Amino acid sequence: MTTLADKALLPTGLEDLVPPRAEIEGRAVEAAVGFVAANGYRRIKPPLIEFEETLLGGPGAATGPATFRVMDPLSQRMMGLRADMTIQAARIAATRLNGEPRPLRLAYAGQVLRVKGTQLRPRRQFTQAGIELIGTDTPAADAEVIMLAAGALEHLGIGGVSVDLSLPTLVPAVCRGLGLDDATTESLILALDHKDAGTVAALAGPHGALLGGLMEALGPAERAVAALAGLDLPAEAATLRDRLLAVLDCLNAQDPTLRLTVDPTESRGFEYHSGVAFTVFADGGRGELARGGRYRATLEPPAPLGIPATSGEPATGMTLSMDAITELLPEPPARPRVLVPAATDPALRRRLHGQGFVTLGALDGAADLKAEARRLGCDHVLEGDHPVAL
Amino acid sequence: MAGPPPLLSPIPLEAPMSREKLVIALPKGRILKECMPLIRAAGIEPEPAFDDPDTRLLRFATNHAHIDIIRVRSFDVATFVAFGAAQLGIAGNDVLMEFNFPELYAPLDLDIGHCRLAVAEPVDLSRDDDPTRWSHVRVATKYPDITRRHFAARGVQAECIKLNGAMELAPALGLATRIVDLVSTGATLAANGLVEVERIADVSSRLVVNRTALKTRSQELTGWIDTFRQLTDT
Image (cartoon, rainbow over all chains, first blue to last red; front, top):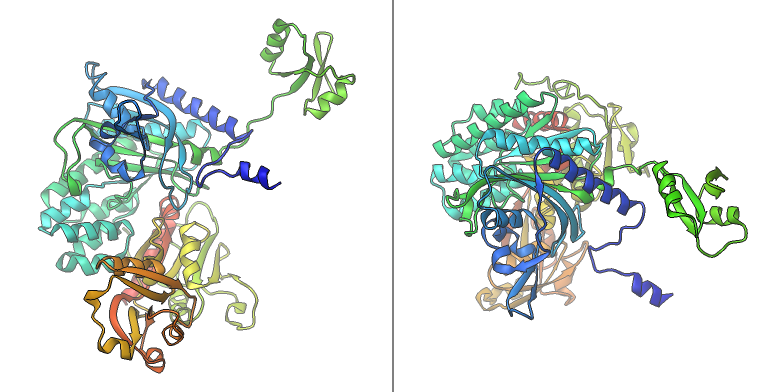
């Protein structure tokens, strides 16, 4: 028994998916990619592993600590296993597809690996499906991607979707406008991420009212918008806020029923984002189901502390966490299973498949076909050319 | 936002669409006494068994059909709320610093449960100790993570021995030379021949909220945060 148990044990954060979960996930990924394809996003397939310097260049720098690395015995260079596919899409847009007309719409689905899981999701291998919209910088583009994230979830049958919008570069911009030093800015970003009112008040000093006001300007969109509009922000930060308001207007115009919340100071997990970013939740889910936002599709390393990047194309995108989504999806209705003799004509089998049956060949020449059918979980056996219920 | 809601009818602004359960996690012990007046002022009244010291119940109904209170150890408040098993809670920032849970928000300092987290050592040791020469210290504590980070920030490796209470015994019995613990008056330290040598952080109780709940039940939870903020401000 010990040896069997030894063989079953997987490294931390990795798991086997067995039926029906693996089937639900596979089906969900195809449905999600199909939904975005119908909206004009064409699929790319980057490799699982590539040179560390390209994988971790540009927006990828933020994923450095999460990336598994191996040495390539051929080129003797370090390679990284992707921890995020957005970076790869950005690289493809900037290189192989730089001649395509803009805006460029790309879709992808695949596996990513992370060195360490998160508190809510200790697993280290994830299934991602997502889109990138590259080469346009308008509120309408931000809204398109957000609508598609919410739309994909609804398409998969998930109800009670709510989108939380944030501005990861807002706090750095406010701090710059107020002339705060880098160390204070960094501590403030962290404290605001935790909505740690005590620490924010202590760090902000004379600016406590403004930064506290920013932190409290969260919640349902109407409430947050009213609070944000009333804040006297430095010029750069005010521009960011106005962009957020414009995106909210676009979203309201397109779908007034979409549940929107705002959290202007959230920046965790948005390390490479440069504009409106968002996280998608749903009732009953333990954590986030999708996230995305505006960034620069560049191959240059990002500037520290949210200084807006100037190189590269403006881009936005979203990634669906298919593992988290799959947990919320019900098992699909079981298809009837029919046991057929192994030598059954393939044309007959295809006809049965067309009628919605799953066919299983009786390989061991069972004497009692009905008993064999029951043992294998079939509810029909083939008699002549017709499936007969047991 | 509309005008301030009346303090004794805290059902957030407009009633939320669904009446999903709201679980509030409160810490057992010292802090509980200090936070109950706030909970009651917010219009939440637990069932009578809550005040019965002999009760074996852990989960209590309240005067609101959809609100339950659970009473757990202070460290567990953070865990219950971080994982979404409870949506609201009250926890000291010592606990929040120790776990550093990304799924936990602490939007309000309730200004109760004040004390400090400090390093203490035997009086004799403190007399001729030179901290600049340390490369390694052995510390008995309930807060191994904070302790490690605190000493690492000045280039000292801390070997932590995790205890769940009675830290003050450790130096005298040779378990560790120093301790990191909560100090309020310092009387327990003095009684055990210890002296506070360094303050790591000032501690007070915070209202904590689960991140996902704050996003998906935004109206309801921001309503409660506002209610508690008004109670704390007055």
